[in-house]
Image (cartoon, rainbow, N blue to C red; front, side):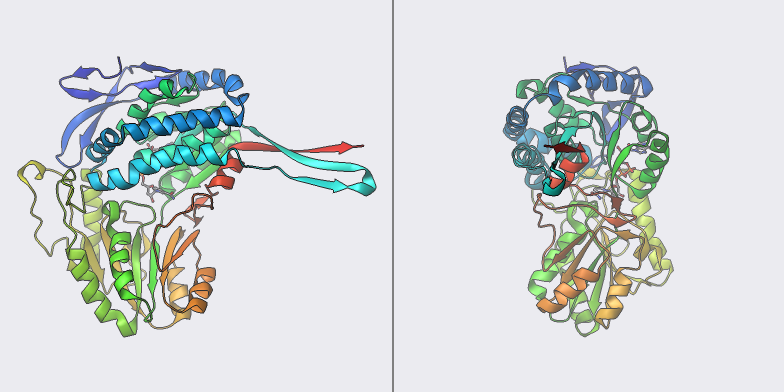
Length: 489
Ligand code: NAD
């Protein structure tokens, strides 16, 4: 019942109250590596969101009264089921998003599994606070309870990974959810819905409504019975969500864009730094909010760095994402590819040097991928700090390299953007590493590494990169309402 085919296209359906339900209209979804329409996604609006919120509200009393242990067991079962189908999920994610099959197999889907396991475990270990006031004859303690129906909105770059990073803590805490994945990457969320009943997730606890941000997303944000919205996406959309939710005083968690610096001092271990910085610039086609896009290199090693960095970037092979030897797959859409290419053109027009990639090296694609949205990893040098390539989030396989002289100077320049999500610092001087890390305006600072995550700890950005944090304790606090109770004896 879940996979109807018309004109051999994959047809998705909304998942509401434990059932797949068709929608009255649909949106085309493209395979980014071929440029073909291969799937149709429900174009949901107010009506569908209304039905999903109602189902979530109806399911709340039973789900929220289950013990954390019962919910934990269900989350673990769901993790096992996704893991059992890991290869099918990875294939689907790669086809739908354009990312390489290797990335989907080793990062996206394993992390989706881990998200459920992690929150299944962490929900069992929270403790609340208690204080005493003997002189008043009082003890105070806090209690936490799920909030209600959570609205979860996720982007297209890490589809199932980021959606489950929200669903898992939301339902572990006892909330019920209405999730809206990106209209461009909806397939793996739909596949997950097929496993919910078998995992023991009661009908209505997880509802998924597919569609665009303007229609389905906004209907969810404006719904009076959805008191909290967890959003990952662009800063522009977050501003709109903030405005639209303001009349209802909703609780918001906003994980937004970045313009992440890498700071490389002349005492850095370049044999570690160069391959890692190529990876931090180009992994997942540069379509990760944590990707490096401004590389500051200390003057003494600047030319050696550039030479070795470009040589390493050129080793990255761009092509058919389903080929396991490929490092760079397709970008998400034709429009996005055009946008990313335009940044390179603008840099060129401003007098920057394009050292490899777009417009410089030939891009050879297999016959089946000629109409796909591909672009080579591109390195730009001699670009000014106030140029749009150094200020705006490009979100593609493009990185800028510039020189700096002093620690003081580079901290100021690294902080000189509106964003503050992630930074990397490379140096073998421990004192310097700590000093610089403390002064960077960034929610995450990785030193001598990149993307090493402990899910227990806060994740999120400063400035235009977001409001709130996600992680074991942070997500627990976001998805629960706290109460302070005082007992006089
Ligand atoms: P986007 O803001 O265009 O869309 C994100 C989601 O919001 C989609 O599901 C979309 O349909 C929905 N949406 C759009 N308009 C809406 C509206 N008016 N009301 C409600 N929902 C709406 O972002 P994108 O292009 O899908 O994703 C790329 C962006 O996400 C980049 O800026 C990237 O940095 C950011 N991102 C941030 C993180 C993080 O953790 N900080 C992680 C991944 C991606």
